[in-house]
Image 1 (cartoon, rainbow, N blue to C red):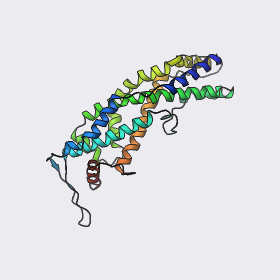
Image 2: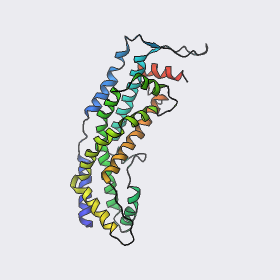
Image 3: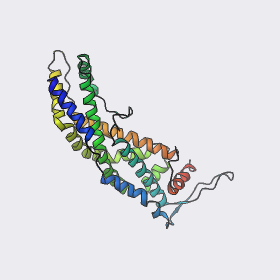
Image 4: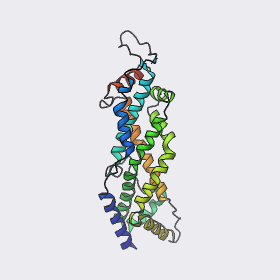
Amino acid sequence: MKSILSYALIASGLFFATQSQAQSKGLSKLKDILNSTSAQNKTNSDTTTSKVVPSNQAVVKNITKKEATSGIKEALAKGLTNSVNILSVKDGFLGDAAVKILMPAEAQKVEKALRAVGMGSLCDQFISSMNRAAETAVSEAGTVFVNSLSKMTITDAYNILLSGNQNAATTFFKTNTSTELTSKFSPVIDKAMGANNVSGYWNQLTTAYNNLPFSKKVETNLTGYVTQKAIDGLFVKVADQELKIRENIGGSRNTDLLSKVFGWADNQK
């Protein structure tokens, strides 16, 4: 069994390492949003009232409702595109401790037992395969985010823009996209995990462990687990990107629209 599992896991690692990165139509649409939002605001006249500031501070220009909405959409499209690009490359998950997918908590005793008998490399290969699956699936997020952006209302945009919550946009997307992300990610991850029957051998491994005397049974839904961890990791990165724009870290407000809209928001605090 050890020999069969070894070949399966090593083959899986080679499969994920050599698989070319998928080009997501959703990412292209997100980039289109980035390229078009500034131009859409030049003819707007529906202004919102700016906050009165002391005379020793720069006067904040009014912004239109469409500028506010487009500014939020541009910021989100930028943050989402960056997040997907960061995670969808090789080691996007595996090489980042903040999002790396480890053995499920209830299966860590299996890992401990295997490492104790010199099968640690198999555990490493298996962990690698889970992360490779997540890296493959995350590109599917683009179309889901585009759909969510298209449904965003002016009220949504203002709530996100003026929220005291530094991850308000991330929370908005998490609330509105998690179900669809699960639907998009699951089949991709299931296919990736099923390459060379890795999921089948995982089931054999856990079954063998469960048959040991006094062992507490492990009944992990591996595809469900990796899918949820992939989504969790994606939103960790989205929150990071949102914070950069809100705080202008590293000059993240790198367009006139972002500078104007978030500069205005800063003076509403």
